[in-house]
Length: 358
Image 1 (cartoon, rainbow, N blue to C red):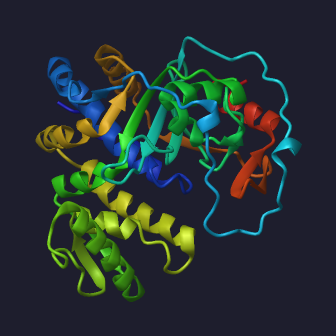
Image 2 (tube, rainbow, N blue to C red):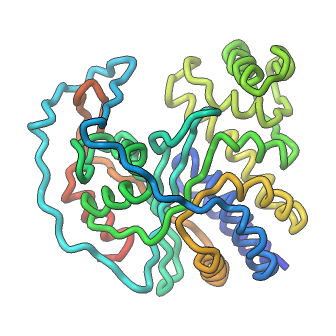
């Protein structure tokens, strides 16, 4: 039987933390389902984990084919010549046999798109000694060195060379080894919402028009009639997966990207609250939806080992951190891209302290 008390504590205590990356709660939904199934039955978990996609060898793009993605709108940051950005040399790579670093990679690709830049990147650190779990978000606009390529946003590393190049980029910039990768396809979040029976959200009057524009776009992509899923009025509404996905993409209402982030947070919190209180049968059903959305370079035995380790800890809270932290970066415009240029030594020091307590 699933240790629902431990799982609920993870969810409840996490909600008390300071505001976190908008996708963390989706990651926690997946972890709760995966680790809950492990506790229910290791043998059954093995058959379910076979639904997770295994990462294949990725053909890297040639260095001369690398590209940059300038912003559509300038943000007024100071223009900086890429040649003027200097980096201190990498120090000794840290490691600890009792510390496991898993990289959680979020993809928000549209239907028909191939591998794109990673939408979110989080290092999940599992410390077997002090029984803690920490999630460290790497901001996607972080300007870094990419081995074999020009300096660029960190999320370009995944587009250029998949998990392997992204791991190498993290190692070169932050002196941290990644022990395994799990990619989450956020475009499948629509299926997750439908599987849990939809969610309740308070829709504002000024959001209706833009919401329905996105709804019609998604209807067209899915082959449904143009007005099949439109939202007709403001107030608390029951949203299906397509409507919730459309809502989370609203950007040009209110406070721009900050408003979009807040809407995504509302969607994910509503979904998280439903999932963390689910019973075993609901979780098994949800696993059939969630697991095909995952891709990993880890074996089934490694995944089960992680699940057993995590739920055996009795974790009462999950710490969350961001790289870069305040006062450890500067805003700049480089090659038309609005980026965060890190104080790389400070960032290394912060990561070392967060992950290894050094």
